[in-house]
Length: 137
Image 1 (cartoon, rainbow, N blue to C red):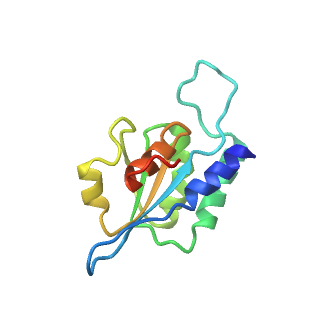
Image 2 (cartoon, rainbow, N blue to C red):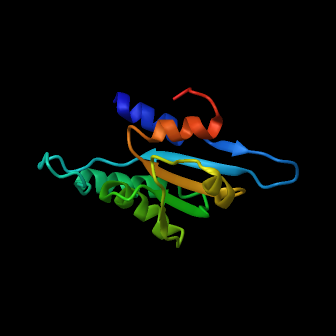
C-alpha cells in the first residue's frame, strides 16, 4: 500500500515549467507495473498479469491527457507499462538513460509538451526531483 501511495503521489506530480507566452511542459511520472518474480537471475523480467492490467489502468486513468511523448527506460517492464498509453496516443516509446536523466537534450525536446516518463522505484523519484530542482521525493 505504501508503494501504491508513492506511485499515486508521483503520478500526481504535474510539473509545469512556465515561460512568458509559452505552452507549459507537463511531466507525468509512473513506476513500472508489477513484474514477474519467478526467476531471480532474470535482470529484465516481463510484467505479470497484474502488471499488464495495471498498465491498462494507467492508460485509462490518463485518458484525458493528450501525450506528445512517452519515455521509458529500455527494460521489458517499463516498456510494457508505457505501451498501452503510447498506443492510445499513437506514439512510439522513446528511451532515456536513467544515469543521465533530465539532461539538456531531454529538456529541449520535451519543452512545451505533455510527457509520460516510466521508470523504476530507484529512478522515478530522482527524475521528479531533478525536474523540480528540489529533493522532495
